[in-house]
Length: 256
Ligand SMILES: NC(=O)C1=CN([C@@H]2O[C@H](COP(=O)(O)OP(=O)(O)OC[C@H]3O[C@@H](n4cnc5c(N)ncnc54)[C@H](O)[C@@H]3O)[C@@H](O)[C@H]2O)C=CC1
Ligand SMILES: CCCCCC(=O)CC\C=C/C=C/C=C/[C@@H](O)[C@@H](O)CCCC(=O)O
Image (cartoon, rainbow, N blue to C red; front, side, top):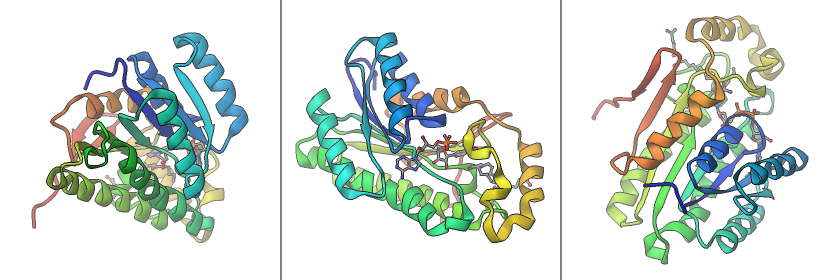
């Protein structure tokens, strides 16, 4: 899929990885609706992006992925503004074991919620053009991260959902590809003040620090570049792309 003239929705787009995903999509010719709860940061980012890429290239919509109503309104506005949706990046997420129910609601349920709303706009069975949906999962979705069991569960669920939706789409004829980004640590706000986010597992902060030391830390642009591969390569469906400091690799899942 070439990106020129395509339209994307990115959740959690005001900061961090979502900001990077939005920027790389714009740099490659797509228009982007940036969804986030951080209204001030989102609005000022979009003003800057429109100055760089031309008025109307980027749109900010205040949206909490925990809200079905807000997501439906945002997707409707994006469709009306850009004439359709070709790409969805389900990126919004938190890591906080002390508020684990919220992490489940955002990281897993938010991905499912946004995906199902996107199907209404994107699926060929609903008159849509098809397209691609990319989830920002995590390396923790491919292997247990002992310091944050619920975060691990949400990301494992995102990987499983992505693979199942990829298979469902292929059989159903949605015309939509589903893939997951699985990065190791990335230099964003999420990896600041980790001990305060571990809840009852704060005694395992050293485990997290050792993993961070061992695995290293990526830049946002490392992740954003990897998005392009999953969006533009039409053969990619049901993939989990591991992004490590030593390079990238597609996860090979054991067949039952
Ligand atoms: N930073 C890291 O080391 C890694 C992060 N990830 C994942 O990448 C995604 C983005 O994380 P980062 O950019 O690192 O975090 P971040 O904290 O820098 O940015 C997250 C963005 O999502 C937004 N957000 C949070 N809850 C939301 C909600 N309910 N509705 C809408 N927007 C919401 C925040 O306002 C923020 O702009 C997350 O899903 C995270 O789990 C995956 C692997 C590594
Ligand atoms: C605690 C902050 C979370 C930040 C957000 C992330 O998603 C960071 C993810 C980064 C690393 C995840 C590591 C998961 C590792 C498991 O797969 C573990 O089983 C790998 C063991 C590696 C080793 O010991 O060689």
